[in-house]
Image 1 (cartoon, rainbow, N blue to C red):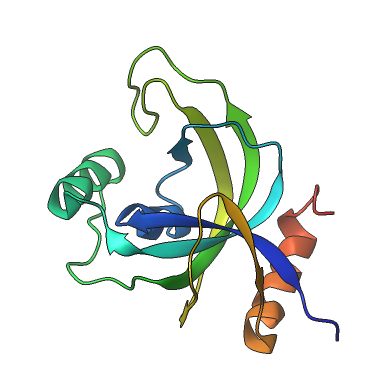
Image 2 (cartoon, rainbow, N blue to C red):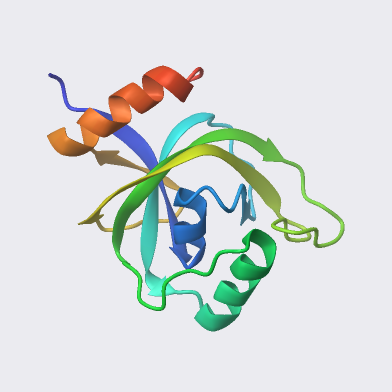
Length: 146
């Protein structure tokens, strides 16, 4: 079986947790993304500067609170990137004002694996165990996977 390499996006916790739990459908970014398809979600090494505040927002918008202690600095799951919406003039739920909205659907969790993060989309080679989970998921939900 050939190794599978997928794009990965680093997101600070507790936001990464909310994405892979399927609770946070939008991620705010300052630039447009043209890619659509499966994306690995990397929990950044650094927590959100106001982790407790981020947890409060997630709980208010989704009804679920992130754990007090969470994994950082590695892969935590994957989601299908299905859209990149134009910036909004004002804040609206998960969407921040003035930023592009990355739309995530069909999120799944993966066992945590330490991986060095980077800015923007970066490539990560999956382990055999991860690939065994991701391949059927892509077959089901990955209509636009290259």
